[in-house]
Length: 395
Image (cartoon, rainbow, N blue to C red; front, side):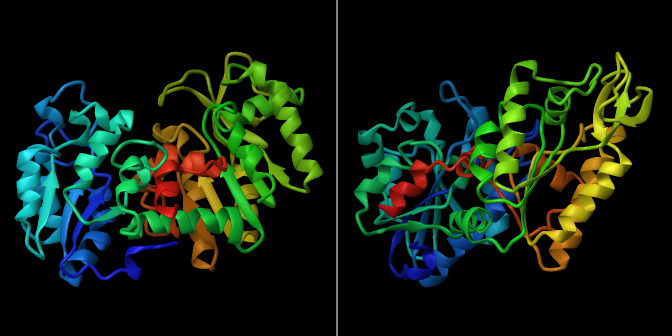
């Protein structure tokens, strides 16, 4: 895997695809700079070698060239993170962008305007990719969050840099972390899959059963498995049409010697509300008109023991409706268990929108080994798909 560590960027204009698709508040200030901070090591490596950086990214999903989606809004945050002045081009191709790139001196950083102001970006247009490629003489892809899309700036552009292309340090870390879980991880390997629906995780489950020793299933998915085995789930979320599939998964796991762990008790509520009445009940005997919204104390204890046994841990999806404080304790307890295991030498990878949000909300970010920056890209990697943005650099 060719990364920035294998290259000296002296007098090189590095065209870097970053993922600065960050949330902005009502004043158009950056509300969470995680993705900008994540790109810092790659940018600084180029600058410290004596090169210059031309940064390209998208922001949101503009329909036209709405000012709300301008990357101009993030310049001050980017300057604060990098500690250097950032120049801005109000287009990503054309005369102004080309002139700004041509005049760039070693040690300088240029940020281009939103790639998605041009519909050719998401269409993977070759002409648009070629126009972008003329701005720099070396291409670095450091945008894991968009690596699963065959867009002009993430995939198509790579063909114009035959040998002058590599992965940035963030993208390299993402690939290595997923490989640790899927290929090289120390056993026992544990995957924790939460979230609402079996249907959204089925390809992941299929792909990882060959790689893991233990699988914890939590969140709303629990109830499809419980009902399929004859349990009563009350008003809990349940995909009746996926019950047969759930039984097949249990059979496959048994055949492959994978131990599946499902909650044995739940915190049930009489309403989907933080202020609902609650009771701890057996997961197979949830009363009519009640719904399971978090795992119960026995389940937390069982899951803690499983986590402590394992040396490689993947966490994708919460165990309950953690956004409501009343139903957050299962997810917090799991975070604590994973933090303990990590402290004792396990490798832990957290990925997928909701689990990343939970990790940030409850302060586990620095207590796990790695938090992935890409939701869709992470899920497709776990499904065993080759991501076009990664393939384009590897070719």
